[in-house]
Length: 145
Length: 145
DNA sequence: GTAGTAACTGCAACATTGTAGCATTAAATG
DNA sequence: CATTTAATGCTACAATGTTGCAGTTACTAC
Ligand SMILES: [Mn+2]
Ligand SMILES: [Mn+2]
Ligand SMILES: [Zn+2]
Ligand SMILES: [Zn+2]
Picture 1 (tube, each protein chain N blue to C red):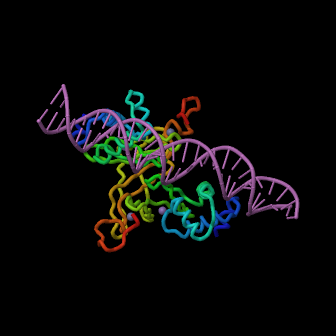
Picture 2: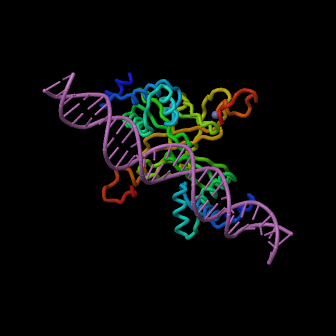
Picture 3: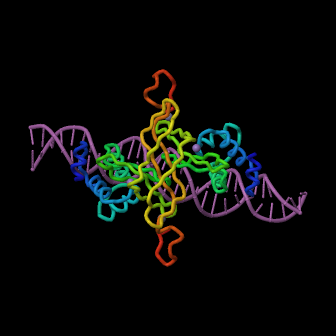
């Protein structure tokens, strides 16, 4: 699956690329470079920081992954859907976790000044996730924050 | 006006704060720290990078300014409206300029998992501004990009 | 106006996130 | 296996932002 995605786009099948694709496909939420780095380290895929940046750039360039601007200053990445499906995201301002809002399309309709061209819309809801919301009972464990 | 805004919130009236507030109020688009720094330098307000960061933090904390995540990794700031009005923004991926879409409210309605709390929504349209759109006549000046 | 005090500033050092150049390694191909 | 060149690893650098701390300044009380 991962190998085929890579060769289909004329890339070379390397350890890091395979692991990144498989990790993204297995994740139900977008992952930051840093998170991916840790996950790769855990499954014993040695790699350089820069290699990971370049692998992710390559995946985005070829439409295999999508880049999301979280609202903090770190990109997050998720596997692109074959059908081009897009959705909004929720960013927990407390622990930094980002989740996908599968059923919320970032649609818009607006009058832009003449000559402007829209390529895509990003909708991000900010708030606190369940683990970070203050109303939860005080003896349940919270996020590492 | 600026002085009053500051004292009303129990802050000390300083050169930098006044200049920042006045610059934000006079601007029709959100400004990055860097842009603000240049503008302040032009009107002869000497200041340290860090002072500007702290002035902006203070303004946001007190609801005088609002912080916007452009999509590149630099915050932008705009004067907050008295009526709490919010709107979406357009980010030119070519020259980095951000403009306000006054009439586009970043509304949303979605079912979040239990326990999640939404504080605000950010909607950013990405594309090319009029100066950067390719269809413009080739002998008009374009952005510095 | 002077003095006292806490808020604010400026500077230096550091943190995080990401890029660029370049020599080395290794995936693909025949 | 030998050749080719894409991909990697390393080092150095850039952009954006934060922290600690000593010194300055805006405000308050007199
Ligand atoms: Mn998603
Ligand atoms: Mn705006
Ligand atoms: Zn959280
Ligand atoms: Zn532009």
